[in-house]
Length: 61
Image 1 (tube, one colour):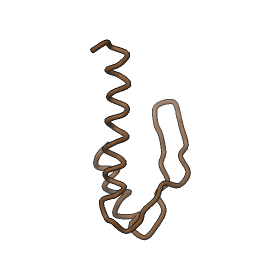
Image 2 (spheres, rainbow, N blue to C red):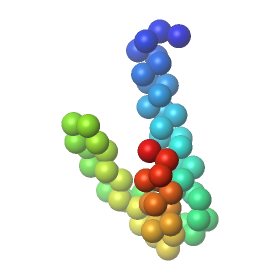
Image 3 (tube, rainbow, N blue to C red):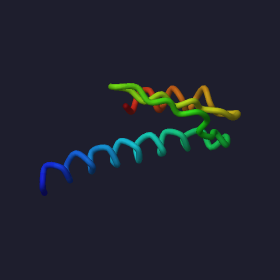
Image 4 (tube, rainbow, N blue to C red):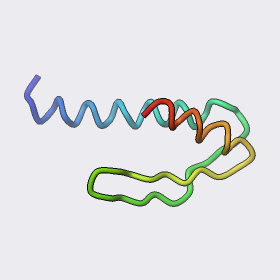
């Protein structure tokens, strides 16, 4: 696999892991504001299961 495609694949895989974590509690958490920094992306998680799902996302990064 070409190097540029590997980098993209890793980014997509990370987003899939985060999406899986967001659905963990099954309490209808949803994505709020997303902010981008040089080395970080910050996701705001809203909804009834937000604390549970945000912690799960933090562990999966």
